Image (cartoon, rainbow over all chains, first blue to last red; front, side, top):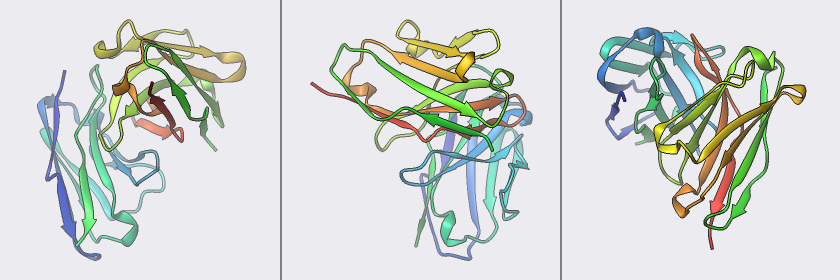
Length: 108
Length: 118
C-alpha cells in the first residue's frame, strides 16, 4: 500500500496570498495517477487536479499542480475567499487507492 | 450533466447491515467504474472499493474484505454498497464517485451519513 503524507496539516494565510501544499508518497507514484481534491464543510470532495498537473473541468488557473516520483505540490497562486477549505492528495495508480490526511487552508 | 444521487441518511444498530444506493445520470453508466469512499466525522477520506458496472467485477480494500459488497443494477443505472457487521466506528459519510482511468474520481455523490448506535 502506498502511504500519502501531506504537510502542513494547517496553513493559515490571508486572501491574496500564495498557498503551497505538499504531498509525499511512501513509494514512487506515476504522475499519471496523482490527484488533488478540495473539500468544503458539509460538501463532497471536488476534483481539482489529475495527472499531477492537469486541471479538471472548470477549475480556475490559479490552481496548479506539479511534482513527480514521491513529491508533489499543489499551489494556489492568489487565495480567493472561496479557496479556504481542506485539500487532499490521492494516488490512483495502484490498489488500494490512498489519500493523504489533508491540509486545511484557513483564513489568518 | 453527470450526477450521482445517493440514498438518504440511515441509523443502524451495531451488528446490522446497511445498503446505500447511488443513482447515476448524464453519462453511460457501464462506461465508468464506481468507487466508494467513506469519511468518519472530522477525519480524512478512506477508499473502500470499486465496481465495474459493465461486468460486475469488484475490488475491495483489504480492510473491508468480507464485510462489504458492491453491486449494481444496470437497468436503472444504480450502484449499491452494502456493509455488514456494523460497528460504532463505521459511523461515517459514505460517498460514491465515478472513476475514470486518466482523471481519477471526477464526479461525486452528495454523500450518505450512516450512524451506528445502540
